Length: 267
Length: 283
Image (cartoon, rainbow over all chains, first blue to last red; front, top):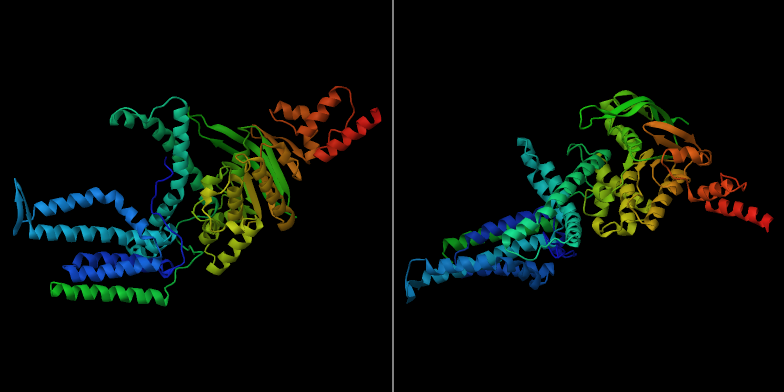
């Protein structure tokens, strides 16, 4: 039952989008989000949508997979849409009982929904086309200037990659513990929410104990393999910028500049 | 050849719950020759895992000394040199993997040592070929079998290019096929690459493949010698709560029934031959 948890799912591939340096993709995602928030009117959104659709097409990620990522957000999207629809002051279009829908509200709701969907789809494209390891490497490299102010960049990246490494192991373990408790008559499926929450205690306690034991053993194993922090560490795969990365970032900058100009003309 | 590991008058104890330290070693002396394949046997709590951790300065002696290829483990300046010289493989392969791609995991040790990228690539490929897992280099470790994971763990140690490898019950969690795979690799490392191997194990069938067997009991060496010398002392081993190989067991029992078979026929072939000789005459 826990098998279908997806966290930072990654679809391997060999397209231009996949081959971009993870740092480029991280920066582009950041640029994309900033630009998206600067959009004002149909023209700007249209430009961004063209950009997003091109990127998705290039990555050969099935649009269905991206839309699936939106599913858990449906409630939030509907909620924000409704709030904006009913609570924006302006020219009234329809009025019934205590509700009134204004033209501005309709417009706000529409753009907000569009913005959230494009935001989520864009960031999903990043995690779908970048392996978790590349992503952590990219983050470590991008944040490395912060080492100067003693921010533990390497330690954070190491923690992230170990956490990612142990997610499947711990899920497997949880499954095992649940089966063991079920075999002894534990009931996880009936009763109200409090009873069910209470039923989780016999799963969480052994899981935590075992996680601590694993952590201890892993630390020893890492010491045995000469781990001594990030100092003087080299990498199997050195990150390198290519020409496509420069082009991509240039495109991002042009996009940002373009949207700022469009914003000026309220488009 | 010199000694890979030389332990002199080792004193060591663990703190226990009631305050009085639990003494593990009280003056242990043992030398492991370079290039040898040594199996260390012992019941739970005999100190064999503690001994393994003393070999690469994970634990430090409280008294006496442990020297690894002439380096004293108490010398902090030599810590990295000691750990890259003596590699260590543990029981649970899941808990010694750091990365979620096989080749990244194997690369972990050379990355820590600051080896240049191209050299790491070469070492990772060599190590993976040595354990027969090269085709799996971009797999996720959690999708592999226990035996395969343990082979990756061994590759991760080989990538450091150590002179000695200590394996702490590496086959305890594996199925028979995985166990045999791991043992074959361990033997190959010793015979072909000249790496000193210290194998800590519960399995007698694994111990008979070593050059030398050390049996530990309560932090002391109970007996020490070639497999044939050690396993013929059936009564001594049983008093330490240990089994003997199945082959020795058969012959020992038959001899107690009045037969006269050679007790040092350890391998299955030798044992079968001895039985054949005996009963051929009878018939």
